[in-house]
Amino acid sequence: QKEVEQDPGPLSVPEGAIVSLNCTYSNSAFQYFMWYRQYSRKGPELLMYTYSSGNKEDGRFTAQVDKSSKYISLFIRDSQPSDSATYLCAMSGSSGANNLFFGTGTRLTVIP
Amino acid sequence: DAGITQSPRHKVTETGTPVTLRCHQTENHRYMYWYRQDPGHGLRLIHYSYGVKDTDKGEVSDGYSVSRSKTEDFLLTLESATSSQTSVYFCATKTSGNTGELFFGEGSRLTVL
Image (cartoon, rainbow over all chains, first blue to last red; front, side, top):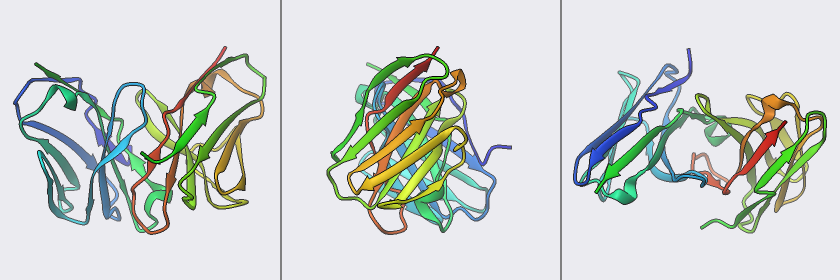
């Protein structure tokens, strides 16, 4: 069983839709949770960062962490064509980025 | 953008040849990482460095070695490339502190024939 499971998609939505991206994990020691966005042929860039459980909002993006269910989500409101990218979840325990586990990524296309 | 430059960006080589990928950063970040990205596997850590001459193995380190003689440079070497090492390689950096915010380079696409 992988440490982190993520539905690879692909996911296609019309412009303006609400997008929900999800990851599940098996290691209860994970306490740092991240979402990275990766455009085609580019390196990933950090989008959202959450410590422990709860919600975090940044503009059109909301990250949720449910540690009891070992489930994290990223919501994108009013999706735009510029949101078309692959979204990677990532998480780690107390060792931080030296032992960061990534999901395989969900490819999102927002259709104008 | 964090100043991270990877070279070469693309390389085709033959099985058994040595290959060195270079990562250069201008941010003076302490930590540097080499990942490989493959379909169905996501990003996997190969090696990382927590200072000049201080390196450690990651999840998929077999067949790879690294060196860091200066803060700004982190080299990844495949001593004898194999077809299973065909991948996209990403360098990343991080400041000190226990967070997951990595800054990634643009990637080096390696094909081993």
